[in-house]
Amino acid sequence: MDKFIAFDIGGTYIKYGLIDDDSTILEHQKVKTPTELEDLLTIIQLYAELHNDAKGVAISIPGAVSDDGIVYGASAISYIHGPNMKELIQQGTNLPVYMENDANCAGYAEVWAGAAKGKQDVIVMAIGTGIGGAIIKDGKLHKGANLHGGEFGFMLLNVNKEIAGDGWTRMDSTVSMIRKVAKKKNLPVDALSGEEIFSLAEAGDEICIEAIDDFFHLLALGIFNLQYVYDPEVILLSGGISAREDLIERIYDKLDRFLKTMPKATVRPTVGICKFKQNANLLGAVYGLKKQLSGT
Image (cartoon, rainbow, N blue to C red; front, side, top):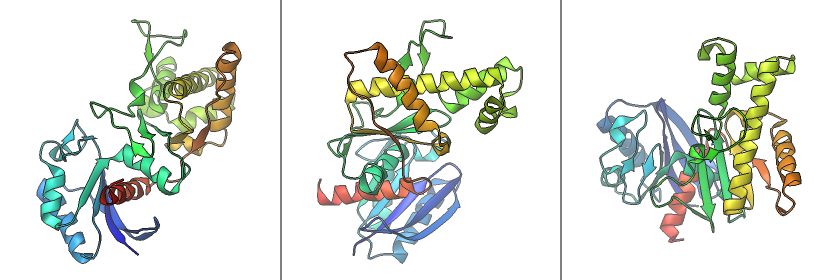
């Protein structure tokens, strides 16, 4: 069975390992992310030397990744932006290299062996500090003309509630919810967490109840819009909020309210939870590498 080397390059740690053709993780390690590019390349090269029978190296990396190997944008790892990372890794390992944005890799993981297995048109939304994700069209990533496909957090939504001065507001995130509650309670943002806000709401705190309702309203509104723009088979959610048992139920409640006011809108979005968590980027990078090697 074929084996593939995979690296998930993050701002704090680099996860890496060996994955087989059947999405099984055979080895899994992590190391603190180095401060210099040369040290990162050495880590990749040394691991590749240990597994010189691997079919290639799959890289999940933050930023807007072009097909030619340049990582545009900005991230916590400044040295990856500028050089042709793909070429450098290929030169150091003498193996085929696939490199893709981390959120896109997470989307590929779900299509390969997760909650979207067997599906061709899929949206994966990562909900956290911001809202990002991946768009899968006909089984392939849709990266867009400017490598911004899946940047759902930049959507502008008119919600007729507390809106920005220009009449529009951006799609919400859990961090935005925390900021709203902290402002109304006159607290520093770091004094609250999403979990605490949900706990306070369950205890009857009106400010938290309203903030959570706003959060689900905006999230469902974004999902509704994405459904009718792209019409995917399923929209999958990831991030810390995805662990909440009532997440899907509350989203469907909002979606059903939208549909009641729009009798001509007959498609109810199918919403689910991503299967993979911490290892999604490794698996998705390997799936991308497999597609690259097979030419599909």
